[in-house]
Amino acid sequence: MKIVVIGGSHGGIATIDALIDKYQELDVLWFDKGDFAINNALDNEQSKTKIEELTSKGVTIFQGTEVIDLNPETKSITIKNLKDNTLFYESYDKLILSPGSHPKTLDLPGGNLKKVITMANRQDLLEARQASEDANINNVVIVGAGYNGIGAVNMFINKNVTLIDHNNHSLSSYLDQELAEKIEDKMKKAGVTLEMKTSLIEIIGNNENEVIAVKTKDKILDADLVIITIGIEPNTKWLENKFLLNKEGYIEVNDYMETNIKDIFAIGDATLTKLNPLNKKVKIGLGTKARRQAYCAVMNLENEELPFFGVQGSSGLNGFGYKFASTGLNEKQAQKENLNYNSVYIKERKLDNNLVGKNTLSQNNPLIYFKILYSIDTYQILGAQIMSTNDETNNINAMSIAIQNKYTITQLAFADFFFQPEFSKPLNFMNRAGIAAMKKEKLL
Image 1 (cartoon, rainbow, N blue to C red):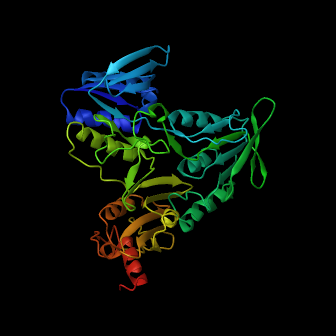
Image 2: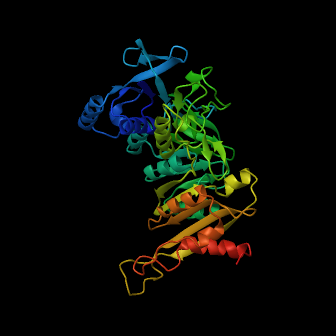
């Protein structure tokens, strides 16, 4: 069975791992536009060793190649060598597409000026790091206050940074106001200017086509560098008229990751994914999702054996002294879906594991901030968020499983979390959140 894999990021990497796990003998052709070493975060020597290892297992790697066309009727693809622009062709028995995404850009005046960059992949990250060390760049404007935007703020914290977003607060796809504002306070103390509830309408340049300022709805801001982090779009333009795509260009797949064309599977950012608390497919750009989809696609190459379980969109970040994570829905998303929901927000002191038998609940111990959303109609948990200066992010995994298995607030209140005096309190803070929700709904 000859298998072609297209794409070298999370989805492509995990596909190769899954194929090696499942099959003892392989005939795999792996195509990617990028550099294998960069995609896999390897140095040249490590990359050479890894390629030799994969080759010995039946995987042939084509770096710097772009698949520009495919013909499902003949089961063949057209490939362009990006070094010399020559074309060649390959056939396949099974095809796994992981074309990924590209960053959204702003269709406004000045969008093509020099020093207007994005931060969506490793190559972008390298360019941004170089810019952060450029002494001629002093004023940095970052558009989009999601994970990449916050990461960019942290990278350029020694510059004059302005963060712009059209939402009410930063990180609005992950955190609610009461948690996000704690990070915003830290950013403000570090000298970051926050421009929320506004949008960019123009990027202003000089005669040398370089950025000098940006214009928002309200004001003009000096800028030597503009970083656009406003989301992603699927890399599927070349697949139009080949597959069933939705109006935004995402590849439609069934529960087994197969497209509407037999023997062609699709995974990663170019596909919509079932979000379990909504029970519908949405856009979720997470490497963890792509990797699980990859294993699912490989399991189903020959027979429909394993449906994809969906996701909760679990993710986390370390920023400005806080470690935080979220899973499922937050209030912005629940309101957008017109859900009948309620929430509970609690704060709890972290035990100091180094003070066994002493004052383990000192006021100097870190606080844990925890919030859950739940349905008023069914009491089913819809989402959770956690934040602390201590790393408590792994607790979000328990909440992700709870949401996936449709736990109610009562089940959370009585969930069996371990207790040992030197590690934890008799009642876990997740239990306490469940109990608080039960009280709120007069179930207790």
